[in-house]
Image (cartoon, rainbow, N blue to C red; front, top):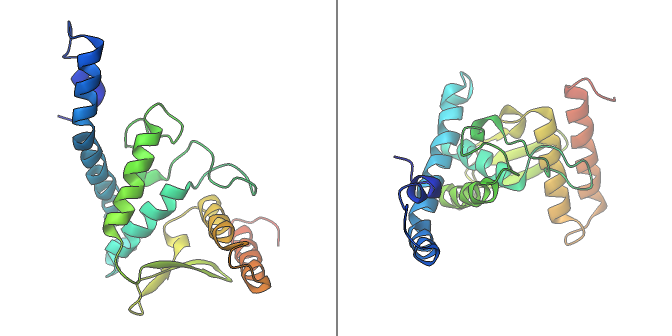
Length: 193
């Protein structure tokens, strides 16, 4: 059985509101752990279902990157607010109601963020390149994020990385690299050249 609050609450007929709240709080950690596990499984399944990705030897790195990028938000929002749309990456649309702004969206986003933290290993990082985001394991293995993402998702991921480094580590080089990455992504989807 999925340990959702709705499933539990449906069985609490006749129990006072105060008792329900105490039970909800007491069972919250177990529900969160279940969601974290489901998020990791969803990322790994999506990767293993892809004919190309299942052949790469760094599948945990790919799962981490997918979880990390989804935790940032990958759809909608435009350049000023990348990833603020409700749609999730295809790998995570089967989790809960499947949307960031659904009634359960915040708890699933928290679980996805925690799942990324659990899979992270020393050296895992996202690097901005002229072609977009490179996912690296710190041991010389890497791949381009476009293998995991649609062009819109990749574009929003680039914008997240740019916003995370600008203005804290501002450099003209960072902005130029991001602009080249955006240009490459737009060209890949038949956008402006």
